[in-house]
Image (cartoon, rainbow, N blue to C red):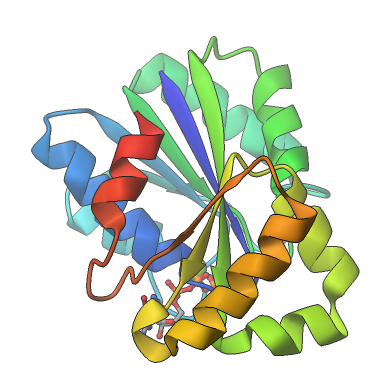
Length: 195
Ligand SMILES: Nc1nc2c(ncn2[C@@H]2O[C@H](COP(=O)(O)OP(=O)(O)OP(=O)(O)O)[C@@H](O)[C@H]2O)c(=O)[nH]1
Ligand SMILES: [Mg+2]
């Protein structure tokens, strides 16, 4: 069982990516379970996901990396026992630290084969975010296995280069990939990195 954790600030594209990943894995006949923390900008909640045929659990509002860690542990244990999926995708809120979510996954003893944190940065709000919340953003990206610069369809090549350089300087060991979850640019690379 693989666990994917989507880390990224509010509105960066976590739910959009989650939907793409879930449908990609379902097409490959993998059993996918989804944990969402709360309905965000795109109002995808547990009920919507279930209506689309996914096994989904929506945790009550609050942050799964702090006050709701117990309910995340319970959700993981129940998913393991009741569904036993090939893949669990977790979307915490945009204010969560994915590292902490990963720690909770480990402590839940669900015997995962691997867990991968996907960091997502929104190119449209990149400069604003690093200006106002550099420390938080850096902490959020620190635990990620690779970083996607999302919404490349809205950016100039120069903006993407600048953001890539900024991230490369701080995270030299990580792959940094510009993507557009919306139009599908580079998502095949993301799928490759996830296997
Ligand atoms: N142009 C463009 N818009 C995108 C892209 N990815 C996501 N969006 C839009 O960005 C907005 C936020 O996307 P979400 O997927 O809801 O982001 P999120 O990280 O789940 O947001 P929260 O759960 O509210 O933190 C939505 O209006 C999406 O349609 C992209 O690649 N390009
Ligand atoms: Mg969301």
